[in-house]
Length: 223
Image 1 (tube, rainbow, N blue to C red):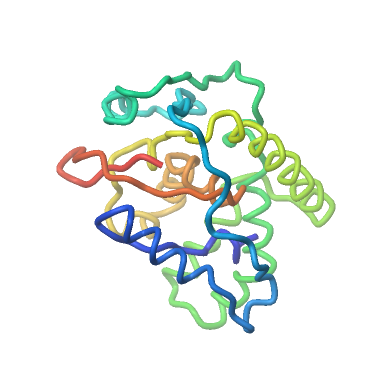
Image 2: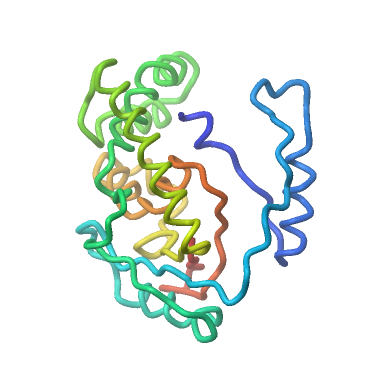
């Protein structure tokens, strides 16, 4: 899971350039054992589409400006919108076993390497990552992976009806460059505020980040 969640995409100024770069990166490579010849372009989606906009912060003290920024995006003013809230019958990312599953993987596979080769700062950060959520064993890990499959299936059904979902990228102003090196509380806050970012990585649907302006003089984005 940690390997799948680490896959990064292209950073471009225009969507057409992101599309071009992603098309190139999606081409076959014999070194990738999981590559399959899936067409890059899917079925045509009839316009206008209905956009789902998140309104669930999972108890994180999100600043109101982020909800306002999402609502101000140009696409929303010309497209039917639904509000996705806690009551929607959809597996909630923020209540999943995402953090414990990732923590178990890090503790089992990456923490030993960090302890062997990393600086004390890196070792401390990885140690924090493994304890942000509940500490689980191999049995709970398997249950978490099974839950992920059920979540992914339900999200696919949801996205078939609502092809575009908007959420904050972070639910707080962009953090300083060394935020995760400032101790356990900072690491935990980083993960809680980024639950939509890490959650999308966990489920692996196509996703992108679009800038929506500045918050506290730092860039902010929608997911």
